[in-house]
Image (cartoon, rainbow, N blue to C red; front, side, top):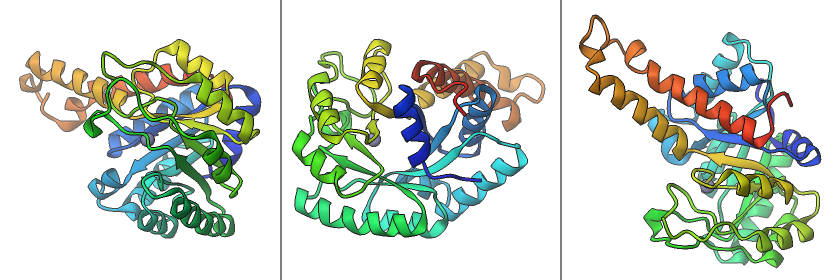
Length: 287
Ligand SMILES: [Zn+2]
């Protein structure tokens, strides 16, 4: 059964580890991430972007697929199904479809409007039993022309949004989505520390987990980060393993073209990558 992410993240914060959010794109991705979580006894958050939701034919399809897998794979670890960077409309659709957690990304609104919309969603999520993530300080990516340094959130604004009753908070601390540029200046631990001091027990979220050095990840967890989002890294290892299979001509040997064979190396690569991240985040054995 799907659970909200609130309790697993509060436990993570108290236990000084982080739970990974791994984004899903299709059936293989979902099955691989659930396999890794179950085998390592790790709580897990399945992230779904609005684009991925559309790709998978819609949020109801996603909910049906995930619930089916939880039952038929015999998953026992806590699993949250979470909308990643949701618009207000997207949040409403996911609440309706049966997600257990949502992120409202109001970071592109003026802070007053972000606050007003977040308040509304806090009330709805409390009533329906979902967990809610909010974002302060836009977290961009290379596609947004971010070079050198991502945005840093204003700690006072973080406090203001935290006080609205959200369950966990994503704040920009120099992190970005996708691959990090060569001249990236690293995470701003000063900003993270200031935010953490003002927001107290509230679990903090680190987006753009791909390519942040392991020591920075560990330091961020020490400073109150309890959820780390990983997306691009799984895509990269899947593509690499699939490319090798094709380049070696294996799809032309016997029934190597069978999608269950063709997608196997990529799937195994995702499982290995997810387990490696769970180990790094310290969530192994915490379920
Ligand atoms: Zn993000």
